[in-house]
Image 1: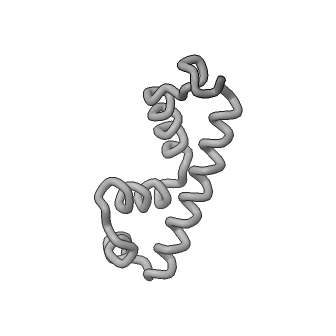
Image 2: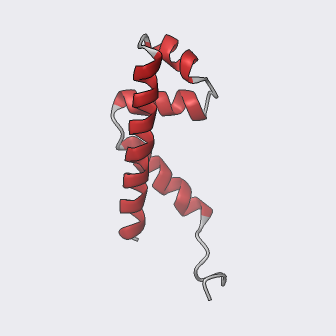
Length: 79
């Protein structure tokens, strides 16, 4: 079954795949992702830190999230 140990995703593998997916992001996408998810900044704070408008920060974060999903899906398909 899918619940057996043979099919359970390994957390270490997931961490490696996430790290690889983040490395594939453009530098500004990587920075915005870091500020949002690791530093826990708001979009307004990210915009101020990156010296861009709030709407530009929103778009940047959305693009980074979309690209992460694509990169992670590609990584899972290659396993």
